[in-house]
Length: 235
Figure (tube, rainbow, N blue to C red):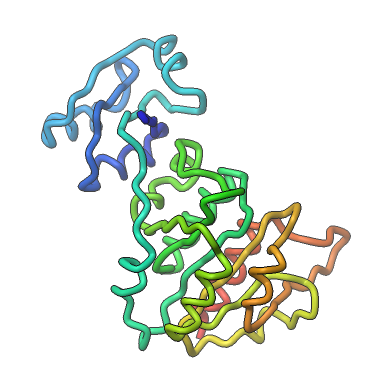
């Protein structure tokens, strides 16, 4: 199915990648640098007016969009088999995450913190769509995403390969600053409404919580993921 990426940063990252682009669409008089890049890379492009662009894409497009056949997730085995476990890689698993803005923001943070891959479920999960791409500002192109049928069984398999599982959950949890940092880790985060499912939570070796000092009782899931990831990579 044809999909759209819009917004200059997301479009530029897509154009720089080796992925196939069906068409670049630009509002007349905008982004000459992208037009020049399209010519150099022999990417088909056309110029339209703002009304036509608004018809093509539903969002803050900044006058530019690219059409393509859709994002292809990576196979989990391919992702994991290429990792050097002695370097203590970090993976992130998103359980029941349905908000594309949150997934896009998490991908952006994963890119910034050197996360090797993100795992999402096939069911009860947001798809890799244009909103995710826009919010990720190109990180959807740089952070491998694997889609699996059963998250709990996937964690069981990863544990057998040497990963330790850390779940962001406030039940029977320890302070996040006590997380182990000397081993391969899968950081599991859940949706803001439902949290981490019980079957996935059972696979966690550690449960961690971020202390809240104010009136609110939790952080947005993408913000919490950022706090936890930066703690994991700190020395």
